[in-house]
Image 1 (cartoon, rainbow, N blue to C red):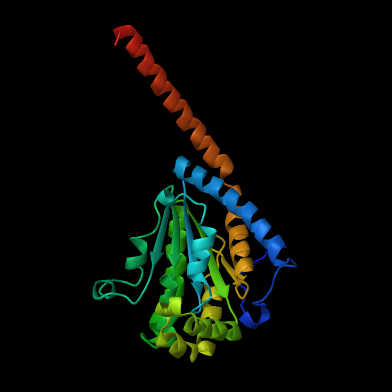
Image 2 (image 1 turned 180 degrees about the vertical axis):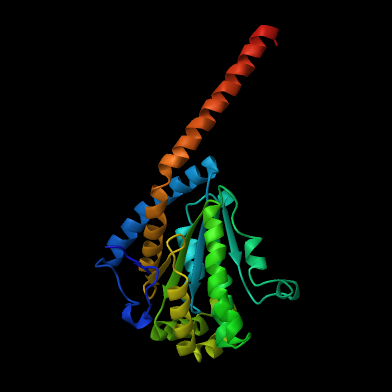
Length: 280
């Protein structure tokens, strides 16, 4: 049974139905051992992705404050070659970004062929924060669901493998983590009164997430709900979701690499023949 829940297209999400403390029937030691196996496989898959240059990967991370987006990136990406990974974080839009359509700042940093791209927050902020804080009329943010689906379909048609993760944390776990930040002096830089203010809008955010997950989980860009109260299980669940579909591209990548190998060998043979003929 998969460790994360894949949101099937056309279904209505109810976050209360998903256990934030799920452990997949594993203890921490077994989970970390399985994570290490998957992480090693992900490393090999990324190498093939980069070398073949026929596809890109876009990993989208969303979740409430303290749900572990940074931790997931740090742990799941730990063995990947940084030359082939590009992480983009989306904060409050700049004046220049606001002067364009809401997808402009996102499209310009989508991963190119061979690149493993990670979005720490994403274009979904425009149907989450914008909705909860009423930064745009309802008719504007509601239309964005269709815009997002069309945008992601276009990326998929261009060879981007899209995998989206909602890190599902409980309200109690969030409170505990926020308090831990206050008590850990070395990490006080993480503190923000804004985190507590956003927490007051918890229910509104849950509703906004339910709608975004329901309206924007498609066959080419599915959403996965990841139990995130246990950090080790969060990392395991994300790794499994990444590795499983990427395995299906290995034959395509190997075919591309075989052709590349033939071309390289032919180039080397031609060089040696020319050197032999010219005596240089």
